[in-house]
Length: 327
Image 1 (cartoon, rainbow, N blue to C red):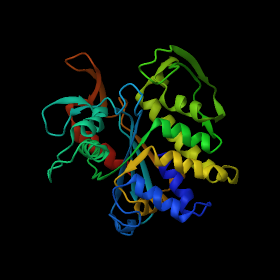
Image 2 (tube, helix red, strand yellow):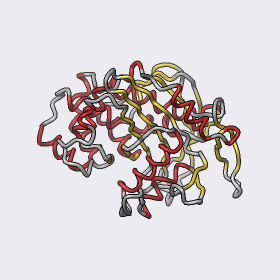
Image 3 (tube, one colour):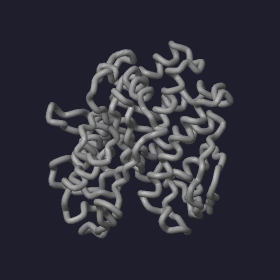
Image 4 (cartoon, rainbow, N blue to C red):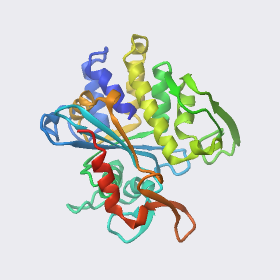
């Protein structure tokens, strides 16, 4: 998500050098920077991109996706929908394998084991992981989701710091326990974090704590995947707002360097730029798949807390998503 915000700045001429941007585009995608897989979003067809956030090397469950969000765009009128898909949905991984796991394992499975999309086996790595996760999200939502963008949380932290921090209007105060060190090999214990209601200026570490906090002490509602999805959407808006501020522009070069090391996508830079420039996040529809609408809490045979479709009806999820798309 943060990568999309940065591309807005790059494509509106906030001082990035063309050669630097081209190198960036080559590093983050398997496609040449000025190529297109979407005809630069010039048609009428809806374009869907899934954004996958993960901890990365040095984190426990390095390639488990902590956040999964679909951005659905109708290019002709800029209609934008953000769809938060819970990581705990119990699905077949790999697709159609008969083996079940949480949705957040799909990227990890492709990353380590490769993925066969039906047109030939893809080697292990970020492309296989991204396409496997996108395929599962397509199955769940009923949307055609051919595109993905991944970002690890270290890059998120570095981006916010490069921009001098961001201002987030926190709707719900909460207190949580948070690990002192993300590295699972270092048992440094826990710290207590707290966020007040109202406008808060956050540095990179605070932003990542706000987005990822799971062990919430009070109120319990802020410890759910659903609450984290809302907080991540708030941070997206805050980052985009910061990028539009002249005060942040001197840090864009450092932000670009941070992202080059930490994001990857199967869109070319040109397509990602075109996609970003057509987004209307200020008026976007927000869709959350939760146990308040189409999901229910459950447990797997091994005792894991999971989510399943209400009444076992996967089609109800697809209908719900379709009925809430902005167009």
